[in-house]
Image 1 (cartoon, rainbow, N blue to C red):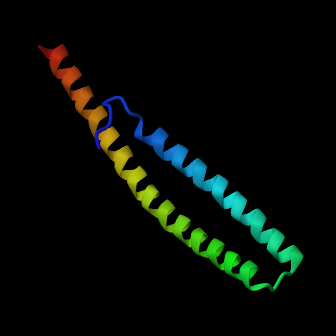
Image 2: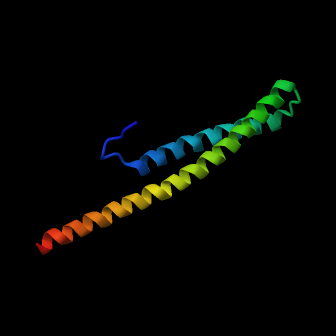
Image 3: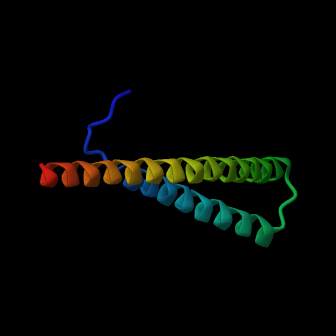
Length: 93
């Protein structure tokens, strides 16, 4: 997969995190509803367990995105330093 050179990777990460936050909020609401209703039906318990598993998967995904975000920032900083050095070299010529 290739991306355009001007792609803002940090913005893509922010959007992904925003979608995960919305999903977490939805899961929380369903869990609150599960607790309020006090349902012990098998399908309700299974759904609750699935939501718990999804929250764990989101937690893992957020950890990976955090690491990726640090790397993207680092690459962007290196690019900016390189541009600054090129600018200095051009001005010195």
